[in-house]
Amino acid sequence: EMSEEEKTFMARIEKGEKIEPKDWMPEGYRKTLIRQIGQHAHSEVVGQLPEGNWITRAPTLERKAILLAKVQDEAGHGLYLYSAAETLGISRDEMTELLHAGKMKYSSIFNYPTLNWADIGAVGWLVDGAAIMNQVALQRTSYGPYSRAMIRICKEESFHQRQGYDLLIKMCQGSPEQKAMAQDAMNRFWYPALMMFGPSDKDSVHSEQSMAWKIKINTNDELRQKFVDQTVPQAEYLGLTIPDENLVWNEERGSYDFTQPDWNEFFDVIAGNGPCNKDRMAARINAWKDGEWFREGLAAYAKKLPLRKQA
Ligand code: ACO
Image 1 (cartoon, rainbow, N blue to C red):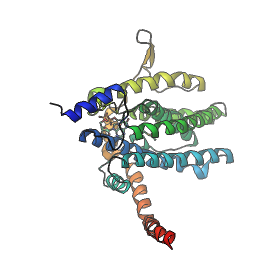
Image 2: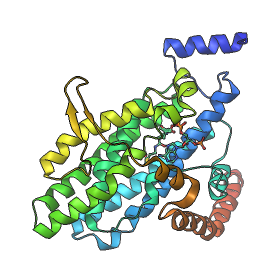
Image 3: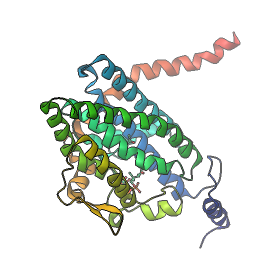
């Protein structure tokens, strides 16, 4: 039986109204948002690591400037998202500590290594492409601060995708060795990119409730299908082969049929056993420790400021 408050809340959700931080909300709604927005923020921050790895090795000054800008944008996205989550009554420090204790997740994709320069193109094109597919839908999510963060993030994310695709156009029109690097990147990133949308709908524990609350707008499988349909012609234009022998246009459905990723691998990666999980967590935990003196300094300075203004 729903309480009066809950009935009013659901009526607002159904009308498509945004829920704001001080509005009444069910405890489960608040918790789900903290989990999802917090994970999303962590993904942006951890997501800097595989690309940061290539900043010092970018082949030209122009590519380096683009990559630097992009990695900095990811830090900014993390900050908007932590701020959005903080409106729900959790602090950024608490979320960081939960991440470091293995009690919060970040996207599975960032546990795969970036082995060659074409991987930077594949991350922009496929990984940011998959992220946008999800985030465009999330612009309409029911929680106001999350929705507004998504609108801004999507604009920047489109630039990220374009720079990745542009990089791959250059590689694919380059030497046979460059083309082969691009194909190698495609082979390694295709299935991990498909996994970003989460488990298949039948294994998605949160989808039903999150969709009823309009936190999620589409199911995991719907977005995965849209991503495949959008990406196949882009791969064709590049002259790259998608590593899936069963990929075929289905006239009846008006969509591509494709092979699902290896879900055992997915669950293994999110349990902490992917190729880079340990490195990623170690990098984040060390950065947090290294920054302790700096955070203390900032806090001490912030305390002094009002006193100075009085003087
Ligand atoms: N990587 C890591 N964990 C995942 C992933 C993934 N790709 N997909 C699902 N999971 C986890 C879920 O968090 C959940 O675990 P939990 O209960 O411990 O939190 C479990 O797998 C079951 O999945 P679902 O029930 O389908 O979870 P949910 O409804 O949260 O859907 C999704 C997952 C689609 C990723 C959703 O959380 C979402 O839209 N998040 C916001 C977008 C986001 O995080 N993007 C990061 C991508 S990278 C980037 O943007 C830089």
